[in-house]
Image (cartoon, rainbow, N blue to C red; front, side, top):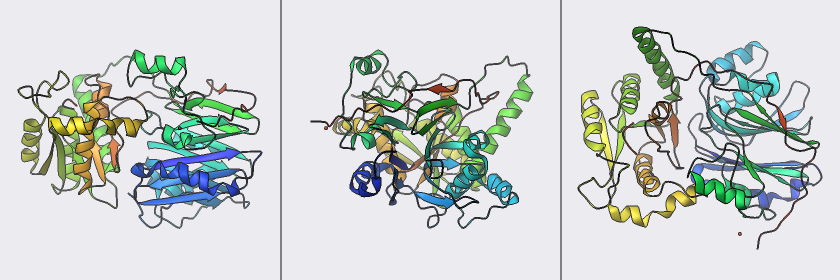
Length: 432
């Protein structure tokens, strides 16, 4: 997990705004505890907080590179590109060379070769911003399923963006205001906002599977990927073989790291399958983690957790011969940490569910930087409503087995002929 932020304005000289961009960047420190970087040009300023996973020394950001004709492009990137090795081989065949082992450099070079169409080639979880100096154009991209967040807002004759609302709200000209529409988004169904809505006045969230192109003439959103629902005609044997093949490939790609890797194990079908496949890749040298929360027989339990995960998780870990660690959470610690989720989300969340996951992540971070999770496949089968909260390590979520997805160029939408001139200064788990 990393944190990205930035400010682009086609009428102002942002080279004098390092302090503002640094403040925006530092709000993302919990997402990226390992390094901080700021890049400035006349009309664009990028910030980055890094959680180092691949190429610890070479993957520093923001990262800049010149195109074939000397035109510079710059990227600030959160996430991971799981097919970066195949893309690097393809780009080398097109005449490009590389100075690092990082997926960031591959992503940046892919833009130089294919432009915004690079998104159709990506396998991963990501949100990123690219500034094209020659075109004076900003590109914002969010991954297909919306795993990595990305917010943006018009500001004067420009735009500000970030991984979290707090990054935008750290800008002195952004007001932390919620209008009636935002209140409605919060009250109807918690954690189920209308896609693209960010609750705060004037703020938007890049929709999953979409990109935003911004220049001096305005801001345009385009969908590049969409799920298609199709009849399932394959028999049971073929279906299970295909799911196994997909999960095996997913896990093999996601355990690639230069830092310790673990798994989140609840003892349910999805997390158990992913843990078993990861254990095969590491030949059993793997640690799994679960959270122990108050059970129904104790004060503090609720209908979200009709039975504890811990006994099932331990059974799976013993069967696989893994070291297993449990983050024990008491009722008192749930109450004391109730604001953790709010601070991480900038919005109301799932209360003590967020807090228990925070305690789990803190335990994981003592030994691991990356953890594989079985949560999204559960989501695909509509089993549980949980969501992992922000933490200073990377949760690699399996995207499940969604098939039949395609880019769509017909959904391009212009959000305004020009940027607005508003410049308001504020007065501030179930088993898976």
